[in-house]
Length: 182
Image (cartoon, rainbow, N blue to C red; front, side, top):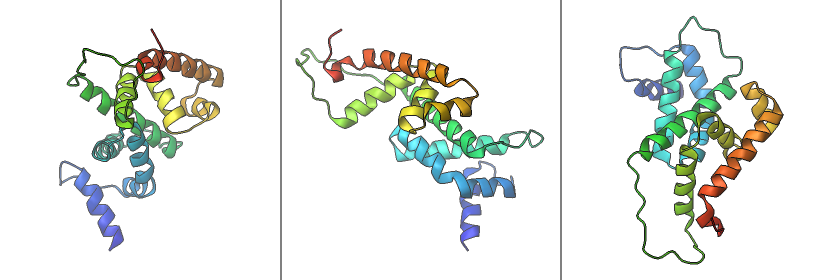
């Protein structure tokens, strides 16, 4: 019964009911769906968005050319795909987002956590793709610089430099929340 449930859940992800779910994809979904959902949720902060990302990631995996090489490290691929798809969701919402400006700015703002989270998500969405991905992997997913370097095929020093520059850029954008002056 449980196997049938997973197959029907995965099948519901597909837009065309005539598409059959390959056994390999079903196994990948069973093994990694929680990882993909958690990674997406950490970036978006929203369960509905994380579910959308989950569907997007596995649809992309399904649509991968069947003649392409098998994934060397499926966990790494799916984690990166989830982070990138989650960043895409945030970026797509960026176009419609507006922030009301008040006439007065308190000397030191005490923002609520959700407001800070939204501001951070918007700031991350404004980053270029590579720095946003590395920042999310480092501080949202909790990977080390060495792990990120291995995952992306770059040097740990380059990861550290990108992390440092990204933190500086985000700090500038988050100054009001950090109590710093321009």
